[in-house]
Image (cartoon, rainbow, N blue to C red; front, side, top):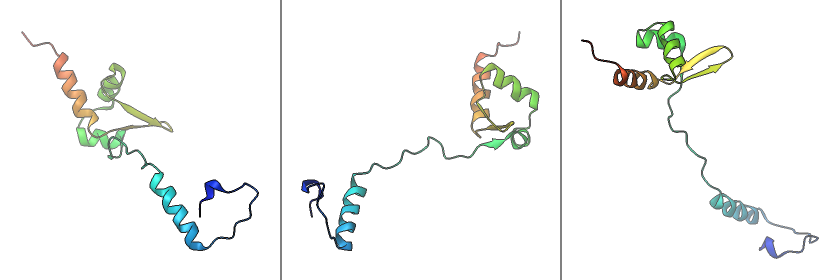
Length: 99
């Protein structure tokens, strides 16, 4: 059955197999959903403090400097697990050597 060539006012009686065939054609044309870059779930600030053995002040300073990306949801702050390591690497690159 070719639905595209039918008159819009045509009454069609179809079998279930016809619907299945049409569904399979539409499903084959549909694009796959985009995947997220990372599948890691964000961790809360409390978990970050324990995991990274740091202070809230240090995390706030890194956020303020733009080195640490944070998500805020309902007043709670969340971090990506790999964000702290990349922030520390970028901080070490800008650090001046001691004399």
